[in-house]
Image (tube, rainbow, N blue to C red; front, side, top):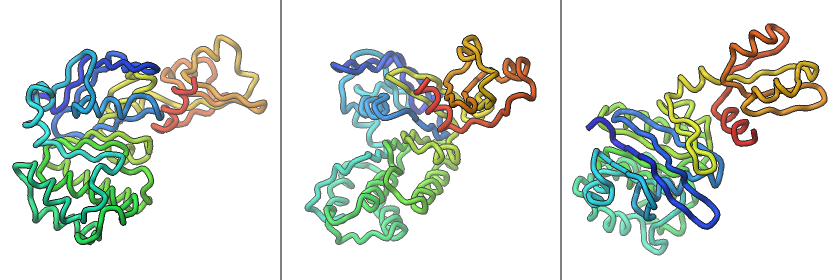
Length: 284
């Protein structure tokens, strides 16, 4: 098996949105960050991978197998962390654990209890009494307690404090030390991905902008800053995204040599963060 996850020419059409023939691949042993603004197609893509929505075209393979024909076998090997709580609110953590455990062939109570302790969760607590952060911890404990080979996370760190966000990243980093496991991590908190992701797939308006190694992306893009006198119409067109004020401009480029040749030391060139790349690309 060369890829843990393969998405090829995936299509899904709604009344006011279209997932437009998207493709990307994730190898074993890596973390892929999935970024894009709200409404770009991140959650739709994840629901299609999990067969919670019916695709209109294209192909999805997980562990080298068709995600619909082998759905039961595949889901036994996936740990899934939703962005919302899908558990029965009136049950306790323990009661819910008993239900969920029966679905997985490799459920590990010892592992689950370890995370209960690490996350400071009381197994007797009713799920409806948990805060958003506590519900996310419970969801994560479930996902990590059946020795999954692929962890899929949909906005797992939104609404969580920085200390616990860092704790989650450390856990994910530990998981990935096993070279047979991979993590597909959708988030709009790009700073989290800069710490741990190996690859970044950027989706905007239902289309893939890029799917590349994080290091290559961060080497390819830069922010250029300069005075207003340097801008003319032909220069403006060379930016992927541009912000102008009466005092000057700053813009995103993936052709640094061009600006160095044209402006030399009259411009300031800075490293672009993933957030810069996303914001400027979306705004244009």
